[in-house]
Image 1 (cartoon, each protein chain N blue to C red):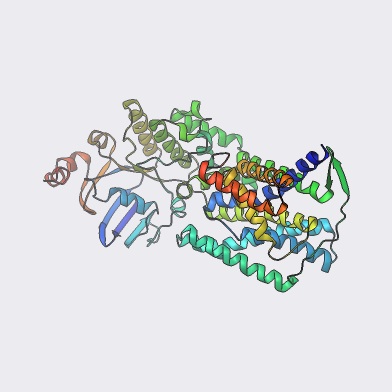
Image 2: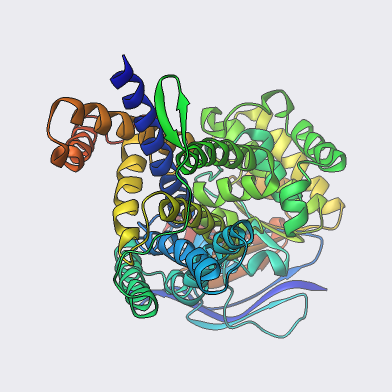
Length: 285
Length: 248
């Protein structure tokens, strides 16, 4: 019973972390229709911003966290203004934009490695354990779960009830018609990049507090976020989170009975199964 | 006064001119119909004027402003130009009400996040949806509407843009195609009302009875060029126009 409780807690933690990556990735995909691999490095940059502010500048951790989230948002916004916006205006294909995002991911990862070395960096965080339904969870992991659920809810509310959300939905639905009816699609897309990347920044910061930071950490985070989006439903907030939870539970319950090295393989088996049997994902938009 | 002019406008596809040196004037606050046989360049003209296709040559003048060599889709609304589509294009996964609200509300950051729908925007949305008979369907997703209702929603969206003075020129691309007679009456009376409120309407249409009923001015295109223009009565009697239509 104790093992089962811990597995459930671990699954929810993993699912919430994947959801943080999936939410921003899905949001950006919904208006741009390409796989933004640079999303991963926005997460890493958020984490490193907090590391720099707390370790080098001695800033308060809460102020540093807020600054880290905003930095990740501006990094994503900068990617859009400097690269993706120009590519969209040239009507380049999704493949070209994907390759450009891979270039950005690699370049910014290299910059992070130059600035902070390739060594693993850790935050001076406490790891007090709490007991939830018989399973142990740290304070950071509690923050991961709370952030995952809170941001899913907040994003769903924004998309459903604000005019910004309606504009995002309109651009996602038909960007050309959105422009015809006077929606500034470039501005909407820029804001979406900011929001999505800021959410990725939260994932990177919490990863930093939970397990530590490395310049290439973004790719690992992104991979699970992308798989979660595909199995949950591309371009759909609830789909991304549902996919993340499915992934979190499948991985953690999977390695209960089989060796832990198979954890990533479980994700890919689920991905392939969905691609073959239900390519639209769990929740169709 | 001319609201819209084209001067030697050219649009080519793979070297073939779909619009071939077209110079026309659209007078403000009137209904100008553009007719011509299939392939004469009518829809291409609408696509060019709404910024959906780049201009290959010539100029477009809007409101006697400096001539434009190109119109980007995002810029067309800033010139007051909007359009409907031959094959209706809506925000399919949004409700009928949201399809209208999304064009009504201010878009600065504060309004975008915190406004939700102010009462007057809801009032405007109610007015245009009631006018098009869709208020009862406001909660339905656009994708679930019938063909005629979809056409009406597209017109409601245009009305919403006019209500907020975002649009002064509306390009209607076959707005009556596939509509039941009652819906045809509704749409034609809406177009007349728009004209009476000072909006400039450009109508692409094949139904000659509707052309006669609605048009203040008719422009006939053939092979991307201007063939004839004048009142409906004059133009539709001309032998060259009849020949172009019948392919004689």
